[in-house]
Length: 314
Image (cartoon, rainbow, N blue to C red):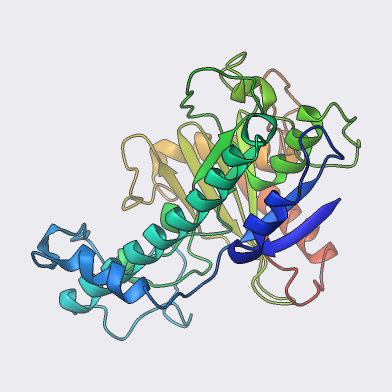
């Protein structure tokens, strides 16, 4: 049974559960605001805002011109504004951490913790002024796309594991089904990450495909992320973005048009076209040139239009 609840109701749900009873899935969405969140923000600001992290490099857009998008902020050059915004953000994170902690305490109190798999993640991040943007949006930067992913297995791992493996939201359902001993439907796009989570394999994926369809039609962004590179293409456009995430993790140097990276660009776009993303699996590589690959990717994108409202992000 799948139940959706806020943190306030989640504790009561856990108290009513029975160890060894019917398996349940509880999807918890945290409360966006709480009266004491301002107090938490004040605690974070004690001693001044200089202790809060702030990137000095802002206002650096990617290859795509994002000036017409609402994520550009009017207070871009006001460092005091952004330090306060970041402090409030940290206060919100602390609030969420405390509320999730009450649920963990309830699970332990009622002997459910060892029998429970917990997955903590987020749908997206926030630019918080980095690259000159705020909130979320289509620019393909890590502040929005690289989100927390913390898993507590149901009594299967006795020591913590930290991994750099590529894991995404599309892998959550197959992983949960695998952990529960249930067959994974073939039509699911994701893969089980249980072997990574239990330390049996370093990685399952060699790449990840991310899509952003922010409007019903006319705009479509698609990217491929590997252990080292991120490539971003846009429907019906010759421009794009290519970053070396090892040497340039903050994505300030776009390699898309650099002559020495053209072979790599074509190879990564071919991998994106084939959706060749599973480690140890090599799909047939295309012999098309870069322009032909971009055209074929755009044709695929147009074939999916129009998308329904509020189903455009993936």
